[in-house]
Picture 1 (cartoon, rainbow, N blue to C red):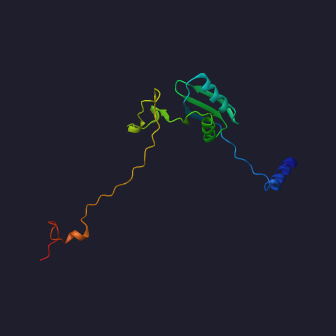
Picture 2 (picture 1 turned 30 degrees about the horizontal axis):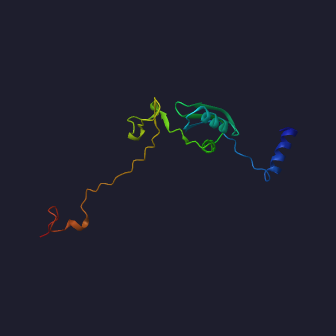
Picture 3 (picture 1 turned 90 degrees about the vertical axis):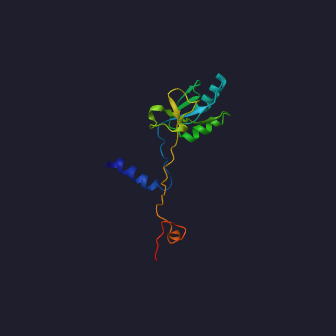
Length: 152
C-alpha cells in the first residue's frame, strides 16, 4: 500500500463525515424538439444551452426543429434551460422507424414527424381479461334457467 496510499486511506476515513461525494454525471446526448423560426431564435437557444455547465456541444437542426446537446448534463436541466428562453421545448418525441416493433402502433403515425421517424409510442401493458364460463351459483337452480339442474 505504501505511505501515500495509507495517508490517502486515513484521510478518506477521517473526512468521510464532512464531505459528501457528488455522483459523477454521465456523458450523454440529449435531444430536444424546440420551436425555432429564425436565426435569432436559433442563436438564443444555442447560447442558453451552451451556458450550462458540462455541455460539450450544441447542434441545431432548424429544419427538423431539433436541438442535440452532448456533455455531462441531466436531461431535465437541459429541458428547463431551453424552456427558459421562451420557446416551446420538449424531449425529442420521435425514434427511427426501424427501432419500432412491427406492427406499428396507431399512435406512432404522426404527419409532423420528420422523414424516417415515427412518434415514440409507449405501449401500455396488456391487462389480462377474465372470462367466466361458469354460471353463477344463484342461477344454477333457477326455474328460468333451461340448463339448470333439475331434481325431481
